[in-house]
Image 1 (cartoon, rainbow, N blue to C red):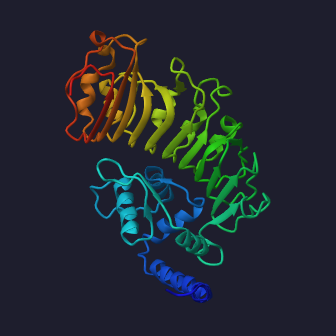
Image 2: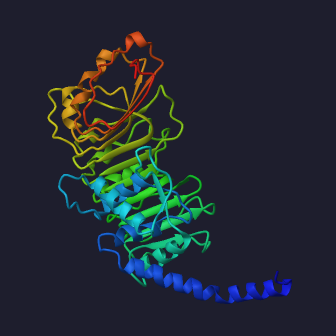
Length: 383
């Protein structure tokens, strides 16, 4: 066995070569990026926006890629979200992205990135290299005046330091705000180039007043103050004809007082995903109302929706549906549940029935043949 002095010599030798080893690994990893196909490079650089050791939701990441226009379907039978899954799996297979959690069917649920790869990703994304994204972190700089953005994308990691952080550069097209606690952000009307606003823990007090000016907006994730909004989703958002994804976190909403989403939102032809952490009411179209087919793929979580034939025509592309039925709304016949089988693209269906006597809820056993996942709670239907 070596003596204590021998072990100290070994430790010194390892320590002296460590910078060389790190530099050598960095060169190899940079080569992995350089050899990426052009279609995958922006998808990989996108990970520079996220904070260190952040668990990234795959579905939301792909929604962002779609809004950015990164995904180009080679197979016309595939939707953009499916293409995004293929791109992400390609990055995983190249050992550039770490797998976090998986769904029961084996699909990726969350992913992450190794610290060393993240450093390379941030270096490549910087203004000195690709000019892809500018990352600001209060954990590193401790300042909030470093938001001069030489690039089209701005990522701000707020930490615990600030309750507000102004966006001064009106040329930013994509803004990501990651915060460990809720705070407010006033949107500046001069930021007309804004296409992506990913700020899930940020409330926008002047949202209703200025949102209609962001005509280029494609993706928005934010916190909606249920009290100040009067229990209704801002009608002005329906004027954003390019909007594809709406993700709203609504705190402190009671089951007996769901959020009211205006019927005008059904006229948004490019809307693909409408997601909230609480139930919301979405009015059904009348038989006389003229509405073209929508591109809606996700509806989560709508309460007491009536599946009329007109509604089915609008939801023809729907792939994921979460719906809640409350006891205070008539009987099961009123919802036209027998029309669900007409949703021929539906893959995920989650149905929850609250406080309803089984005899008053009539459920038809007709499900679409495309269905891959069925979750139910309180539904009077035996497996």
